[in-house]
Image (cartoon, rainbow, N blue to C red; front, side):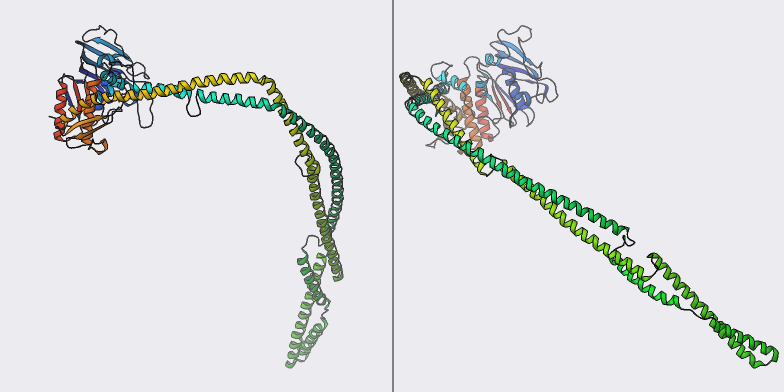
Length: 635
């Protein structure tokens, strides 16, 4: 098989083409230019895209990873040469959930379909191997040079190095035998442990049958005792409940009577307080504050006392009038006598008289003002004298004292009423507790719990008697159980013999596999060693391969093969490339070889070993087409 032309709408490839030829094809391109995408496209064209794969942490299936970036449907075509015919295969996407599901294969340049080739078998018909074997041999992805084993690849190589039968695999046969072993015994599961449990159950039932009669007799005796206890406890509990009810009701009635009395006393105190406050409010001083009123009353009484003396003063005006008359007389005498000295006494008398008259008038106005002020103060108190004010003040003090006494009596009665309510609540709680015949601490409650426990015990005993009686009827004749136990023992012996035979088969198969391994590894090892010697210039001569395809190598000077952990990255890649090429040579069918596809497997090599690896690939390319994608320039 030779691939000639590719056209792809796949990942970053937008309807791009790639032409190939026989022999060695080296496609050089920098990173992120689509080399790995072309590799994945070739495999998808041969084997299709698995639409059932699902994305998971760290992994994207091909249907998502290589969905065209342009949003166009995933599709492509491949022109190839196989079985001396030119064939063009095409894959297209019709449904989004089934990428590249539409398949056609025609002879190139015509519309004649290739008989027997469809989307599910195209890859296997063209390469001669399944997708699994192809991916582990002739298809070397970037970063996966090492070979990973699988049952299909194991079958393929086993068939080549042994009988040619490709339907057998040691790992599958071993797993099948172990599965049969596990069915018979796996820890505490399987046919044998289950049968052991059934045998133990049968033995237990026989033992139960033997002791059931004695157990029923003992239980019937205990049941009679518990029934007597129940009758006694029920009578004691009934009498105790009656006493508790009477005592609780008596205490409750006393508490209610006391509450009613305290409520009535409080109502009377409230009425008295209301009357005292009303009388105080109706008094002249009812709205005043006592301390401020006392200060005001004392101040007003003192003021009235002073005003009373001022208002009682009676200033005389006649001395002034007399002086005024004398002044007039002196003036008349002056007019008659024309004696100048008469003017002096006249003027003095006139001035003195005017002064006395003005003084008397001022004193009289002050007395009138004092009387007016006094009348105003008395009017405020609605009193005629200071004694009336003192009398009203004493009345106010008596009313105020009466209100204080009423408030004290109301407060005392209210406290008694509140206490009575609390006492009644406690009595009600006590009554409820006393009437709680299930969860309380009273004697009736304790007797009730004892009675319930006794009845429950009696019911349990009755249930056990019924169960034992039922078991006796179900178990039947002991001879039947003995016969059943013997049958179970015979079946157990048969299964145990099968288990032992399977164990022997597993051991025998392991020995046969070790014998086959002695032929399996050398066959691969010899071919891988030849390739390893070529790519390392003869420095590494031997490659040792285990069944899981892990490998070791050694130089000409080494006596012990080196594990992969002790090799450089370049040497490790060369070793596994040699193993890959050997697997490809052995696993791929003879006849028309399929292409060898390599994606950047030589990036860790130095220039010398890169040249040696390229020389080996050129030799291989003489037999099969080699398609190498690389980011390193090679000569």
